[in-house]
Amino acid sequence: MNDGRRLPADTMTTKVPARLDRLPWSRWHWMIVIGLGTVWILDGLEVTVVGAIAGRISEDGSGLDISSAQVTGVAAALYVAGACSGALFFGRLTDRYGRKRLFLVTLALYLAATALTAVSFSVWWFFLFRFLTGFGIGGEYAAINSAIDELIPSKYRGRVDLIINGSYWLGAMGGALLSVVALNTDLFPKDIGWRLTFALSVVLGLVILLVRRHVPESPRWMLIHGRAKDAERLVDEVEHEVEQDSGRPLPDAGNEMTVRQRGTIGFGEIARTVFRVYPRRATLGFALFVGQAFLYNAITFGFGSILVTFFDVPTGSTGYFFAAIAFGNFLGPLLLGRLFDTWGRRPMIAGTYILSGLLLFATAALFGAGVLTATTMTLCWCVVLFFASAGASSAYLTVSEIFPMETRAMSIAFFYAIGTAAGGISGPLVFAGLTESGAVSDAVLAFCIGATLMVLAGVVAFFFAVAAEGRSLEDIATPLSAQSSDAQDRTTQDAPVPRQSDGRATGHRT
Picture 1: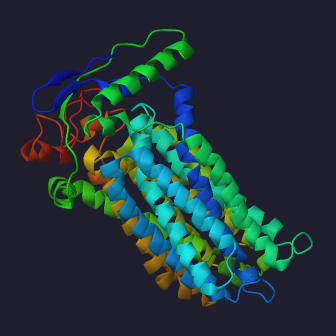
Picture 2: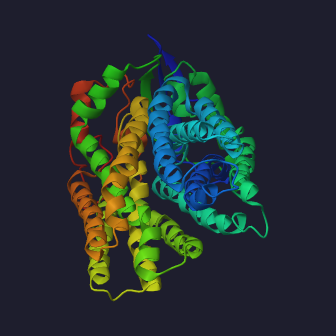
């Protein structure tokens, strides 16, 4: 089924993208989801566990001379700085050297850094490997989101991307419950329990690494990096496997495209493409990431302090409440993800952002009126985050599909770094004092700040979101390597999507 043909000047006409997009769901796609998506569970587990063990690791007899403030302050900031740095560093390498090579490297770095964190013997050692753990996780976001969107058929891309990003909260839920067990001194000594939590992350990561070795390189990336024959051969194999599983032949692929194979693309061209050719989309990415970062910090950064301070919940029981919140977070992408592919990106992105912001305003009003208990407060948070989590996950989906393939990983990295920096640096600075002051009005103000930014991001999405549902990545943003594309052609892609009378996209590049 090799339908590519050689043209002069290192160009190739191929149907590889169309062949990938028209595949029915199969076991091969499940391998992609499991091999690439499960790292988000590790990230959620990692972040939650560190917050949960802060009190224990700072106690006498823990084996580490560190304060709780250093764990939740300095170490958390270093993890965030590492994630931002890793996203930018590995994002560039992912666009240059390929998805597969980098998502193996970043996971290996994460595993090594986590293992070395478990054997920390001094504060500087703990800080160093928290930074390197974040460095690996940040690289994972760029490499994996790129690979997922380029391998998953366009019909399923939205829901799969959302559920995979939302699986972070399965890890968070597991981390909250794991901390209850690991910190039980009747089961483990003080200097062992917290180390075992990191060791478990390593074990899970090794299992993921074994599965991930079988995940292929992106054929789309191979097409423009001198490996067109390998891309065609890989898609031939996948099609054969899918046909055997389904027992029926595949339908004909859609349109072909002609690409010019090239080596690397410089930062200058990437920046010009993202900010000059697609200014509306850049504004959209910035608004979505910053909005969700501040909403999550308004709630999750001080949730423990709020429960303890205002509702007299014992510190040892906050993990149960957080597990409930995490479950609500996961249900959002799981149950709403399909609607991003059917109802469409614009109504769902704008709707989830605006609705979660309005619900947080309502929660702030109820909290300020003093009518909530610890249980009803947690239920309110669960409802808010049910919608917010779907919206936040769609931010990663959005920036991974609305820019040209050659800039995809770097675009994900850039906007992820902005959102993570806003949430992990500005967020704590803004919300720490508000949620820990003991004044109800301060906590209400924290909620309102997060809610306002979420609503504003939803308004931006209403006007700027791209109708990407069911469309090929190459149709959403013409590759820079496409033979017929140039800057003049691509500027039109920031315009609204033409619609037929029935409301469906016409398929024209816009």
